[in-house]
Amino acid sequence: MVVVEHIAALREQVRSWRAAGARIGFVPTMGSLHAGHLSLLQVARERADRVVTSIFVNPLQFGPGEDFERYPRTPEDDRRLLADAGCDLLFLPAVAEIYPDGGQSATKVSVPQLSGILCGAHRPGHFDGVATVVARLFGIVQPDVAVFGEKDYQQLAIIRRMASDLALPVEIIGAPTVRSPDGLAMSSRNLYLTPAERSVAPGLHATLRSLAARIEAGERDFAAVEQRGLRQLRESGFDPDYCEVRDAVTLDPPHEGSTAVVILAAARLGKARLIDNLRLSL
Ligand code: PAF
Image (cartoon, rainbow, N blue to C red; front, top):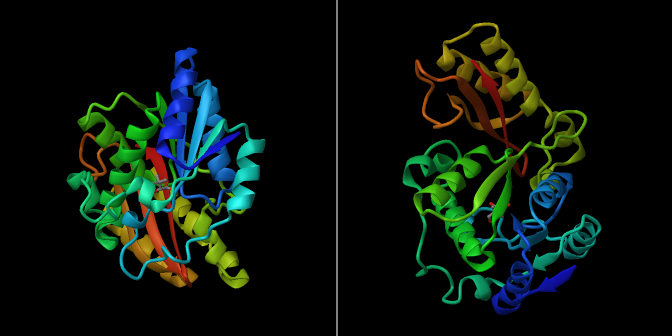
């Protein structure tokens, strides 16, 4: 695995692979890698000849008082996992490489319609930070295909929309959420959980499953489903930010023509803010 810190070196390597006819896959990450990230790499390997992974904890997507400083950083483990998983190039830029002027006056990318709802309503500016860094990373790597986890359902929808609106020549692939046997979605932020909180955490997925069962049984009062979800989460020991049922494609509230919905929730447990979602056909 080639490891580079600078854009020029990355470009030179990618250019030579492309000249040899290789299709380039890309998995952007913030590191602290786990089985969920490795599954994205696997999908990228199936769809491309060479796979680039980036590790960059993007300051632009953290709000004041959020966990930028204490976000888990495990560079040695990450390198080993990526090399073992068949990553061809690891891009490890410093903040100044991505935001030469510090970022605050950089061009921003915003997908307003999708960014102010759900997690965006609770983390103002977060998705502008995500869209901006992903657009810049796409400009640097110029991948043919990029893979993102479906656990971050809203993020995936925003990146798809950005790529479509900006006519970026990259195929965006969503990869299924990887879960622990007890249902907890893999997340770097699970490291914040104490043992006691870790035993409560699967309750988030269990709540979504129980709400999905009601919808599958014919419940169409989605507001009641959401209220039940919030109640269940509080009773299990979470402090929920939201629990909402949305059209699975547009993320609007479900409407007459909706053929699939997604139940999305974010909830705090101690120092961790966990998110999860469950998509189902109507
Ligand atoms: O999902 C993440 O890890 C990040 O939001 C991403 C897509 C790497 C952008 O910083």
